[in-house]
Image (cartoon, rainbow, N blue to C red; front, side):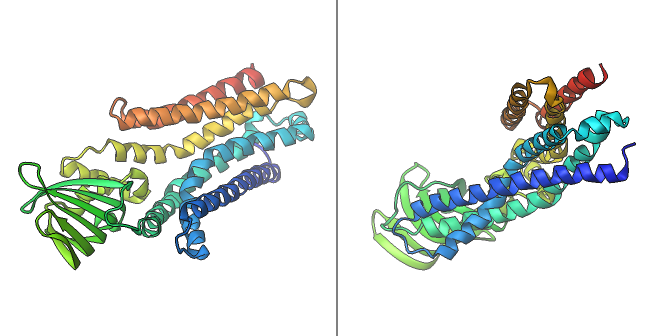
Length: 361
């Protein structure tokens, strides 16, 4: 087995490289996001501190998608540096195989994947929900009655008040609270009865409590209410089903799957998200193996540039393949377990086969 001191040295070099890339890219993403939000704000009266808070809330979700690339490039940079300084040559001469000095990076990748799934993802989901609420408060302050061009979450319900279509810019508290709300109320013949705009909607038992509501009806015209009640037969679980699965923390996904199954909603999206998070350590391990397969070549043999380019291309293809599999899984074409685990498994096997061929073949 590789010595403790040497293993700690290789592991420290790897984690330093990964964190350097991760922090550098995260800082760049935050700056670009801040500039984009400043442009979108325009003439609105928004404090700079509020924009910084919004960027801070959005950052974990963006950087969560960045982690596989940080591991890939960090591993490539670590192995290339060790090879360029002939440290790997010395390690080989001492009888240490490639598998032994890859092991510290592989173990750290598995630990990073586990931490990302169990800790970072729940934090990211909570912050993403807060970012959606804050963004709705900033960008959905209407300059005119029933401003157009809104987007967000859409709900359909049937109640004693008739059929209603509800649009919200953001949601929180497990579907119990909506922000930036538009409601279109129809009769049984699909004739528009009312159009309602409210800054906030809270789901009470049997009714939506619309706050600061403006109601427009063809017969009466515009009326304003501090609180306006709209009957509903929806439950928080049914409302939550309309959310993107990324807003549900890892630890809450099993309960969300169970709740959606009991009310008859499709659960493929939640199952896929759950399996993808479980497979994240394996995906990061695959990135390390791919990086090792292209970065352990001794510099004096030449061809380093082409080899590195091939490794980067393989890493990007693996990531694209992962997203394609997730789309197929979400559409129900492929089982969520296969969609989540197959790309990571294929990437890891490819890396192992290349290493076996170059190191032991």
